[in-house]
Image (cartoon, rainbow, N blue to C red):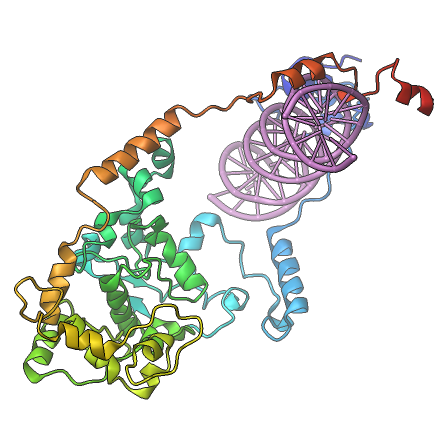
Length: 426
DNA sequence: CGTCATGGTGTGAAGGCTCGAAATA
DNA sequence: ATATTTCGAGCCTTCACACCATGAC
């Protein structure tokens, strides 16, 4: 009996204990890349010994499917009915997943909720090309041709490995250029396009979150005024799959005072510039005209809007002190004091229109995008990464010396042989 | 007086790798 | 019927962490 104990890895010390009756009947050819150590393969010996326990029979693909279906039907009988526990017709190879449809298979397990057929149209000006995903074929499937075009060159590993990577930095800090600049770019989370980082959250991944979890995700921390509005405008076209979501417009305080005719016209012109459609679900964006005008509007806002805390605080005729509010302002006096000074947003004292104020605000460089602040933070990041210290730092050298001199048993500290404590124990 | 740091080893978890049965061409 | 491919089960390697007694803080 000659056992082949040579070979790499565990094969070097594997001893077969199984008694193989007829090795000659084995039709299996050994792998050339991995030399087998089993006696049956190395020789024609009728006796082979193996310590391995016998393999459990491999589950068939359909068996796995049926088991999962049975589990789901047990756990959620209302959602996953047991009557449809059947094999999906034919075993589908992974590469075929991209082309099979839920309607043809028992997709009830995957999409228990009624699926409409929205079509997402992403503004081509945002991603450079149009990514209209046809969700008709598969619930979560994206149109492979469109999507793959955008992701084809995306290499996550290179992003991780690349030291600098503007993208890497931006994934941590957020790409200001994408989010802050205003209407020209957007941070729409509903987009299915190239990874568009927005304060560390890739928007492309937002598809999975946004669609899978059924929410409208706003990662812009209030800085994506254009992005949110655009996303909601897009959602109106796609009906947003009837996802349960809170309409921001409903919970936002409204300024119901009608604007003057010419200003309203100007404002409408501004709002309709990016998109000609006037969606019914569009978020209500209030553009601050000026501080005085805003304060006046706040003071005369509707009861609904004044129900908010800010509305209560801003309401001038409220003489009662609000507990917890430390700053008390008499708005009448403030307004009177500012009445002859014009708007604080304007230098010449003239009142700014909404669009003018918006343009003025857009010029404010909050994050120093083009300045040295960003450059400095990137440099700090690089330097910190370069000088990382992975080895253990000894804070107290005395303790290390003592620990080295301390007796051990299997790595654990043990009592000294001459210590009184050990004597007492023994 | 209580807390904490100190290092070598055991142990479990996690992930990678290999093999072989089942499916497919 | 045979060759090839697929992929799940099992094995192996790597890693993180707890454990221990003692003395400094």
